[in-house]
Amino acid sequence: MFEQQPTLQLLFQQLGLAAEAEAMEEFVTTHQLAQNVYLADAPFWSASQREFLQHRCDQDDEWAIIVDELNELLHTDAQYPLS
Image 1 (cartoon, rainbow, N blue to C red):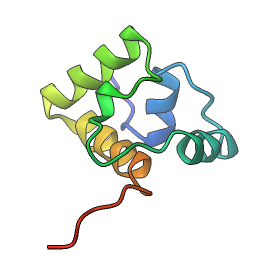
Image 2: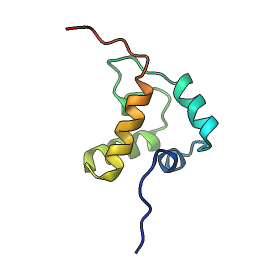
Image 3: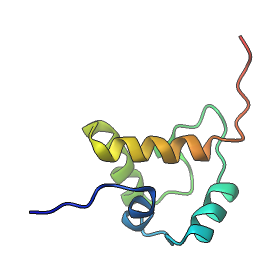
Image 4: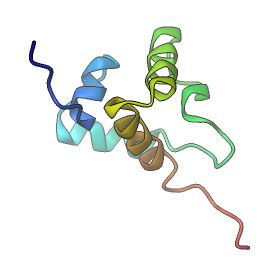
């Protein structure tokens, strides 16, 4: 059985979001999260989207890498304290 390599575009599709480049960029820029908000706890996810993201992180598989990439993108504007 052939499985596609996970990509950010496939993740958007799995989440039921528009996966064209422009739509993904718009989603990322309009859904920035504060530093203390965990990706799966973001208020804009549905219950099934939240469960999918959490499950993928818990599995620590190839999808977890892509979920982490989305996490980083959604925290781009977060302000981190300097140590």
